[in-house]
Amino acid sequence: MSPVLEDLKEQFEAVVWEDSHGQDVARVPADAWFSFAGAAKEAGFEICGDVTAVDWMRLRPERFEVVANLVSMQHRIRLRMITSVGREDPTIASLTPLWPGANFAEREVYDMFGIEFEGHPDLTRILMPDDWEGHPLRKDFGVGSVPVQFKQAHQVS
Image (tube, rainbow, N blue to C red; front, top):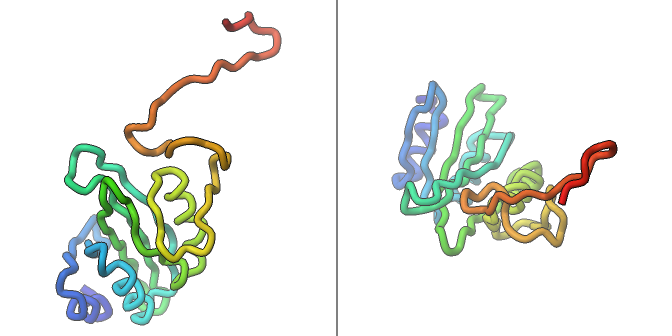
């Protein structure tokens, strides 16, 4: 493990460290998400390359995981941060105040999964229309069909 990560490990005892195919993964408790991210930024992780989510639906007690991928150019390492958010109130602190580039990724997670990011400057839909109901990447989102009529095709009823 990199000395930079060793320092983070010492600061946050509740974080569980794993290796995933050669990449360091920090499983961070939800209440330490923002403070851990701030310490990672101070330690040299200049870039938050992505924020995404996973819907475990019925497979885990906490339905959703939020995943952030961090990059340190100066230390030449990557770090994946993962935290769990609740089924009833899927809310976590926004990383946008630390890395402004997380803005659009958090909006996408909000739009697709319905996970709210506290402290986000403009948490609005980014992919779906404003009046869209539901969150399409949730595993319980109803998959329906909208009939499409093509020119020169038989009439759909």
